[in-house]
Image: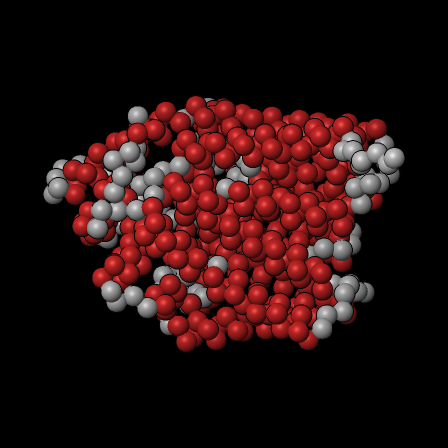
Length: 476
């Protein structure tokens, strides 16, 4: 009688660690996700809910925001109809996609690292990637529903990249190519801003392979599929209207006008990239040093990402999988774009690179970095020193995540008080008392309009804070 296959003991440990890290971020979300409309949500009320409830909604409105996010808009409307606009429910909906993303990434890693021959290195890599994916270094993905939904966008983008990898060494039929173009086009249309960064990065990886590697013939078909999908999306947005503007012209103008701030840009970019596993502003405060003194470290992080990207192509990993390079490039492009469009020369604060809504993309880049250097270690001669170094790195990264997690949980009380205070202020504002203002992080640049108009709308239709008397009970 055959015995059933068993998991190795090390695999039990890995699975337990992954589930523990996931449970930690899930329960953090459950206890701390902000249920109130926040920041861009006030604009969404005017763009999506007002037409929906007042009877003049049409499908093109889903693409009418300056950063079209049709799935976010659809969920926003669905949330209002079914749950009375509980924003914490959207965050809870998104968190499981972290685990789904890890499953997809794990499948791709197995195809490149041959875990049966490199068991220890494989376990170490998955543990590190899980610690990045489920990290509480930034709490924005767990408390702010708009950022949480970026997790969903990343999952579908990773799924798309995995489908592109399948093209590299398999001949596809015309029907399969057509279906893939339709699928990628739908991804670009439904997750316009986020998916565009991933697919543009994937296309760049393929084009570099075509130009510099001997396996160029395998990259032509998937590159053509992505280009066709991008063209289809642009045609779609030309029909829909203003929501599909790309902003390349504004990007070039901004670069030229602010070229003298190139040093600040570099520091800003490095700060954002490091935020996947280390919060530099918090670190500078903890160590009692000025933010500027961390500038060399920030610049080093940017250089490290660039060197890693070079290694990714030089060591041949790009011919095995487009995903690591795509993830690194996507985070670099995001950090560069954030620096160009969001850096304020007047304040000269490179720490503003910690833009919360981009954390999911910054974290993706760190995954690509870890994956690439794991590939390099596989090619290096096996030695005790490499194993010791790997174990030390695991300890340092996991311990830093433990510290971040403990810090995030300690701040829960402060966050709860802030939610209760904001709830009280919003109720007073809805009654015409404008002597107090809600915290800036809750309204952003939307005060006084469209905040006050949206607040009045929510009161009229009994949504969000006017819908559920128990909305804030768990924060008391």
